[in-house]
Amino acid sequence: MDYREHAKDLLKRKNSLVSAYSAIKEELYALENERSVCKAAIARAEAEGRDSSVYEDRLINLLADLEDCRFRKSVVERELKKLEKGLESLNEYQRELLEAFFSAPMRYTAEELMQKWFKERSTVYRDKAIALEQFTRSVYGLVQL
Image (cartoon, rainbow, N blue to C red):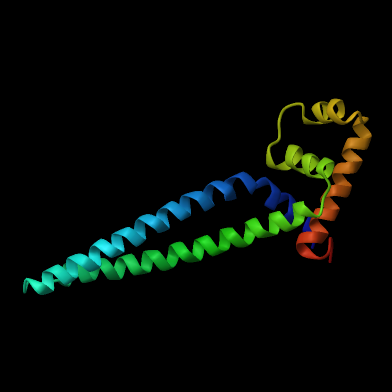
């Protein structure tokens, strides 16, 4: 098993994971608010002697949605922590290489990096491979089984 492929996939999903984390936090906040409103509606219905089963059913569904949302948030957080740990082990040049080639690829990535860092094309690609291997070791502990 080549963990470099997993590392590449993780780097490619970086922007999506950041967006997902933000969206999940907002969803969690909205569900928490809705749960509070539903609990208040149940209390109000019981105080007024009305049937609260509709609100209780909704609360049960909300609790299931909250649990699912918390689980998804923990998965995304775990992936983001892997990314953070892997990237923090690299220097600025290596981080920029991986970002440019995997997280935010552009049309002339190599040429732009060559100009910015005053490197030859072969050096940029060699350094990218070295950075990917170091990132992979930092995240997964090994490169290949």
